[in-house]
Image 1: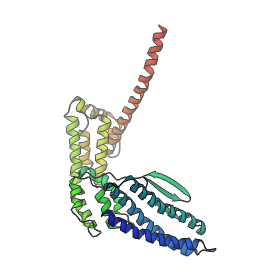
Image 2: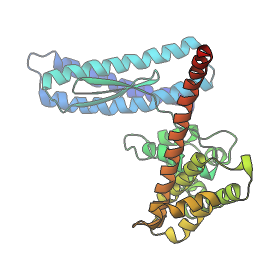
Image 3: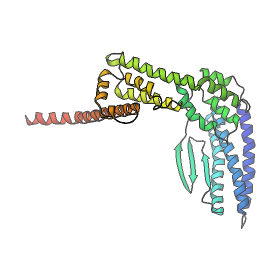
Image 4: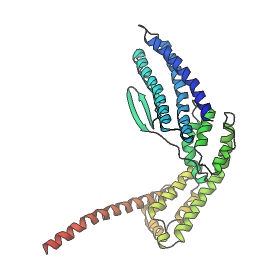
Length: 328
């Protein structure tokens, strides 16, 4: 969507916001305002405000891409804040008049922060930014975990969801080219989502990839020598990450332990396997894979404690040596 079209669409929403706000102000100025009118019109105001929130960041990004002046950007932010201030003010006045403690107001500032108000409590939270998708299959699960919230938001038009999806693609990648190949329209959003998930979110292919990643760990950690071996902490993090990814793809670690357990165990060094076989957890009741992961977790925790103890001793040791020299 172009900058000009986005601005025109937002102008229509702003006109609706102003009309609804004026009706609310007129009702609020009455000696005995009609609470049903206030509540009905406020619901409409919230809906229009949500629509404005969807346009504002899009327009700001398009202005930055168009390399407008800093003054124009500042004026845009000020303009957005004026509508936000109006919404906050009316929300407070309506809440006072209706005495509705369940009134839930959600607003977003266009100046890098989010503000949520409930029962007169406000919290400033950092703005959430979706990490751009680089087209690598290993990045799909984490990306979709973030974008899914936008995809399932019923308050957003499909064309706005499409725009956010396009913005979330890293330029020059296969994913970017795929999204750009579809005209940006509401009708095409379901089509582009279907194509995107088929290309990058194929469950069978992703499962194979994460299994291959476990095989790579075996090759890297068993057949390599010396400094090329992964430290235990890094090895455990990678193993756990891949297993969690497989679980999110429907590969349950307990029901698939017959082939997952040998793979995870093969990632370990011979020395660590001997320690594992002497461990209490080796013959403990419960799924063997879960016991192995718990063993590795405890080993990592033990390494961290050893490093902590050594680092504290390294700080203390020079003082001891200095004291001994003075004593001599």
